Image 1 (cartoon, rainbow, N blue to C red):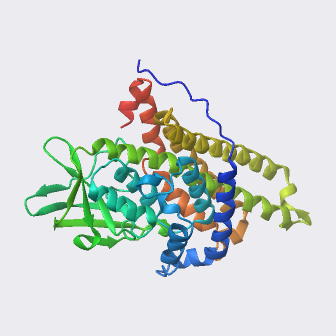
Image 2 (image 1 turned 45 degrees about the vertical axis):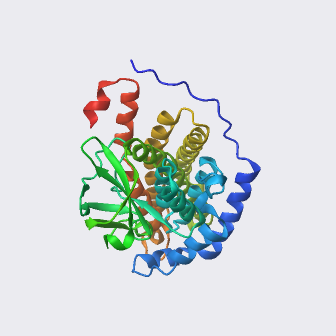
Image 3 (image 1 turned 30 degrees about the vertical axis):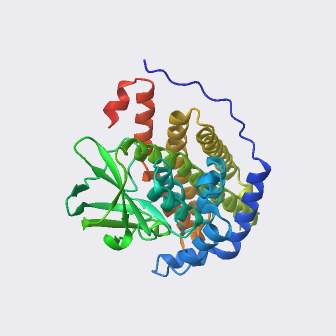
Amino acid sequence: MTTVPEAADLDLLATETENDLRTTLRDLLVARCPSDAVAAVYDGDRSIVDPLWRALALELGLAGLLVPEDRGGVGASAREAAVVLEELGRACAPVPFLTSAVVATSVLLAADGDVASSELAAVASGERTAALVVPFSASAEAALPEVFESTSGLTGSVRSVAGGLEADLLVVPVRTATGVSVHLVERAAATVTPVSSLDMSRQLADVTLDDAASTELLAEGEAAVRSALAVGAGLLASEQAGVAAWCLAETVAYLKVRKQFGRVVGGFQALKHRLADLYAEVNSASAAARYAAAAIAAGEDQAVSCRVAAAYCSDVAVHAAEEAVQLHGGIGMTWEHPAHLYLKKAKADQIGLGTAGAHRAALADLVDLPLGRAAR
């Protein structure tokens, strides 16, 4: 049987720095990311995206959280990144933090050399935004896209890339005779076509490369790409936990004031039971996401914790959003109420960076269960 590392003894209590970061970010999002502006993105009005991202990346310096100070970043850890993602999930904020500051940055961190250092510093400062050119549904174990290099450049097409619309720099895995290399491509050298997405706060795009000029970042880059996808899935769980927490809090607040038959609806026993079950689920999701972030930061138990969090939190977020829509009654079905934004984000995130089934299959492989291989 495969040897699985014992669970690490990690401190999951929030530090003073994390609490301060959460407070600052939540205040900014309340002021600059109202739900009606997010809803307007679905109608094609993306005017909120760039100013909000500049505020997060430049004013707060969040684009460089995972980058060491000696490489132009803040020198924080996955714990702080998880706080950011949880708050972004609570606000349904349409910014490329996950795709640029987490996933693409994780690949850039694996590279050395002047080009890598220069581009990493630009991304960390918020001057540039990057995206890893893989489908948003790709898990760490999935087959990578078929992009190839010839004497005239890179050629291939990748569908449903998250962060592609906002990216200045494309981080492209390229198939080689011996494995996978990683190249950097300027956005202007590629054709990036937006597609209608279920969650327009993270709109997907198709990326086409036709003899695109590129710079090689990593000659052997498959491990870096797969590690970035695993870390991304583990931290996406924090965003899902934030979505679930917002849905629970808003639903409880609504049921405390909504009256029916002369009584506050929240006083009905059947609804109390549903909310109690949801409360337990949401808090369990928060714990799983926090443990995954702490494990990534400590470099311990990462393989298991990320997959547990990704598998569990995705389903909890969807359940919490569904309950929010239903328990808000008629108002929850309307465009004016933001519940639909959270349901769409939860459903889209449910397949983001691997489905719950894919992560459970990976967990089964870790303990040498045949089900893991059969599930794929």
